Length: 304
Image (cartoon, rainbow, N blue to C red):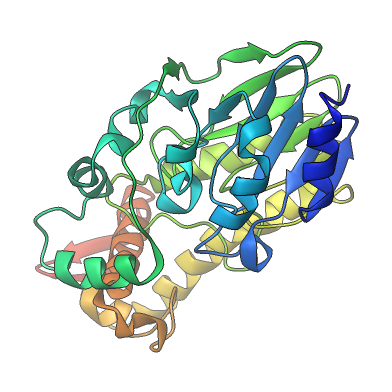
């Protein structure tokens, strides 16, 4: 049910992958790689766009045809174009994050830290923050009926507290947002990210009947979906094993970070990336301690 000829004309100007009748993945600038992301376009009685990180040029083409913008979560590469839309829906848990840059930095765990200045230097190289305010908040796992289609905001925390994937059960389409199935693997570098939750969220998606899955940073996939989710989850467990291998010698978090398990040294020229890696490593250490595999000795860690 294409809304109008103008929308057809607009779609022809964009890089899209048609997932089903009236459901499209709009590929973001630079093929949706960070600092951009892909968006899901749903064309029903309402035209709905999920996430606004495809790039300003792309958004200018489509924005006047969109009735509702929904954010999957608060990260900057998903909210860059929020300010271009009048009707913005954000999950309750993250409803205040985009209202100011101070709120954004606070929620991301950056505000007042030793790396704030370095993080700002990196941030402003790629992004310009525009405050945006939700016209409606929604609850985790809420179901939206935009016309003939029903989409569930599947609460998949871990990457961020309010992170949601979006599922249409009749068409068996899953927009997994930043459970992105990329070779880099799961990212949980902010203090508000939660590694056990991320693990559970990946497992949760594996329980759905999915005929096609797509994400914020990867192309649609129809085959071997459960296997791909399993491979993505295994990257977390591989990182655990890499850490345990290094802990044959007692090490601090700083020492572990110097071995470049997450990022390489060129990426960590920005201190913020070393900080992200330390946050992720600490979450692994906490998990390994909870599993009884690691113990703390002063500022160092060793296997049990």
